[in-house]
Length: 256
Ligand code: ADE
Ligand code: ZN
Ligand code: ZN
Image (cartoon, rainbow, N blue to C red; front, side):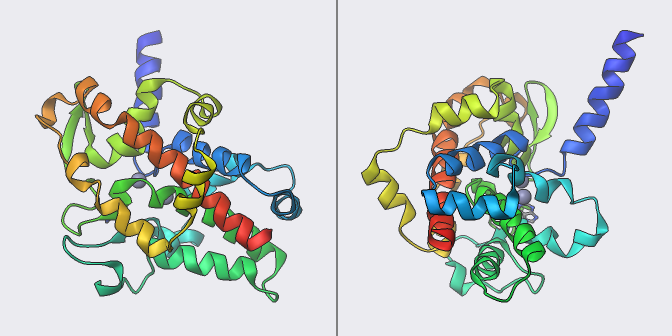
């Protein structure tokens, strides 16, 4: 009986997490790292909008509302397509919006003197989430496989896909809390921070493309697990940290 119950819970868990981006843990790590690098003034102004809600908690909200059809218009904001050999500016733009464009729009709302407080709270939660997504390399897709969602794989003998491996399977396999993982990744030097925070959002999207070759180096897709995790753990940790550091840079610029 216990086993049946466990299976039912597992099945419902798997089917609900399927639609989530960087699982909750990945997003929260990005939020936590950003929180660690805010200026005093930015921290104070963010608190005026979010109250006691931390950036880590705010980060996953955009996925939580995905099933609410009020937010249907935001579905395409989680990703961007940049085909091989192109740059963001070359690409045919998605009329429903995309990750790069949406980040710019959220920044503008947060800087605006006329946007309402409620509008800014939502824009801030979106921004925290989207800068995280930008650092999941498969959220910058080739346009050929829905950011790896169409690449069916077995992860430790369970059905999955390459996108989900990057969103959550690797991170969940490590069994670390978001605070433990944030602490493990957050060690950049002042020099490194400065470098990461420079550049534009479109350039950061372009950078994601440079990891494509490594990300698609899956070996036998029916036997993914320890080897792939080992090959990509450093990159994944760097992306979480970089996402957090860059988010802090944007927030310090907006609110500092
Ligand atoms: N749908 C199409 N491309 C996608 C991507 N890169 N990430 C998530 N969903 C997508
Ligand atoms: Zn997302
Ligand atoms: Zn995702």
